[in-house]
Length: 337
Image (cartoon, rainbow, N blue to C red; front, top):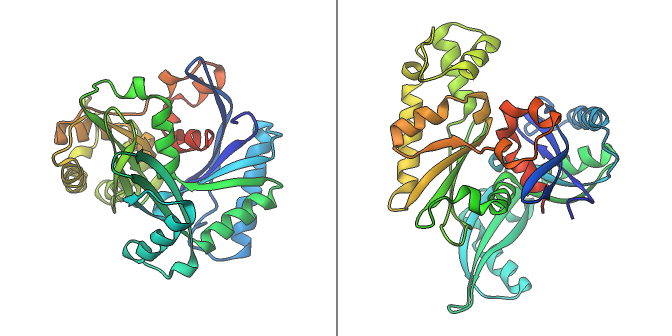
C-alpha cells in the first residue's frame, strides 16, 4: 500500500514528508524532507495561516519531485487526546457508542467538537476483551489540516496522531528493537512543549500504556538561553553539539538539571514495576542528541535515539539526513498505515 501514497507529518516545528517502503526488511526511501511549519499553525485561527502552510507543502513536494496525490497525515500527539482502554469485544457500532459514553473522562472539551478515531491494538479471545487506542482531536484542527492538504492539491486518505503512527513504526522492526524477549521497551517522543512516554510489551510488541507530561525541547532551549545569555541560534547550537563525555564551554548538564530531574521522575513513575531493557528517543530529541546519555545516567535505563539509519538501505538521500532521522519516526509509521 505504501507504493500508492506518502505521508505528511504536521509537526509543531517542522512539516515532514516521507515516501518509503520495506525492501528485504529494510526501509528504502524514495523521498524524505522537511520545512518549517507555519508559525503558530496550531494556535492561530486565520486563513492566512492555512495558506502559508499550503505554500510550505507545495514548496516541499516540488523540491522532492513527488507526483503522488494520496497522503496519510500525522498531527502532533500534543494537539490530541489519547487513551488506551481494555474494552469488551463488541461490534464497531457498539464499541464507538461505548467509547463516546466514556470519552468525557479523558477529553477536556465537548464531545461534539471532536473527531474520535479508534484502533484495535490487541484481541483477547479467551476473555472476550480488546485493547483499544482511542484518539480524539478537535474538529478545528482536523479541518485546518485538511484544508492545508487539499489546498496543495492532495487527497488526505487518513489522519492520525504521532502516538498511533510511531507505534506502527515499532511494529515494523520487532526483532531489531526488542533485543530481550523478557522485557519491553519505552519510546519517548520529545515534542516542543510536551513529551510522550509509550510502553511496548514484550512478546506482543504492542503499545499498552502511554503518558504525556509538560516538558519538551523548548523548555531546555529556554533554560540555555537564559543561563548563557545567548540568542536562539546560539542556544540551539549549544544543545545540538553538547556531549556529556566531552569538555564543553557551557555546563549544560548543570543548567538543565532541574528539568532533567523532573523528566527523570516522570520516566521512573511510568516505568514503575515494568520490565524495560531500553528507551528510544525520537522527534525533537535529534536537536539535543546528548539528552539520551543524560537520561541513561539518571534513570539507569540504556537510552538512544531510534536508529533509522541502521534500519535503512543506504543512499545519498539518507546520508544527507543522517543526524536528524529521529525526527521522522512518526512520518515513517504514517507511511505504512
